[in-house]
Image (cartoon, rainbow, N blue to C red; front, side, top):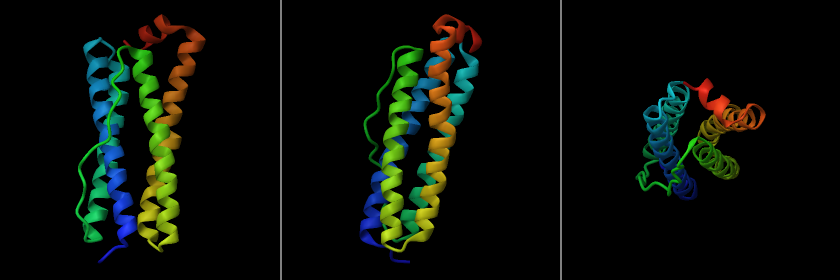
Length: 154
């Protein structure tokens, strides 16, 4: 099915954000594992897998719309400690959230309601799961202190 070129172009741009999120979560999860923090490793590894699934869904949609997926990812920001990793991931989620919202509007304006619904689900994951969890972790660090937080992740 031939899709709208503007929608295909936008979906291709979104692939880059999802791939960046996947790769940033990948490196951060492995850093947490190396630092001996298995609880946060498991959560961030799970987030990495969800971002890969988001990218896969968009890639499949672009192919269905007879487009060619663009696999160039956006730049990533690798943290150097627990707090900078969490802050970098949260900033990336805010960035992805903004782009998803614009994509939803574009799809609706162009009558591509299937792509819109796919992006709505990804926006829900971004806001209600990823972003919320990251904000909660940074809040916990403020409330209980970094050392207590780190100890809780062992």
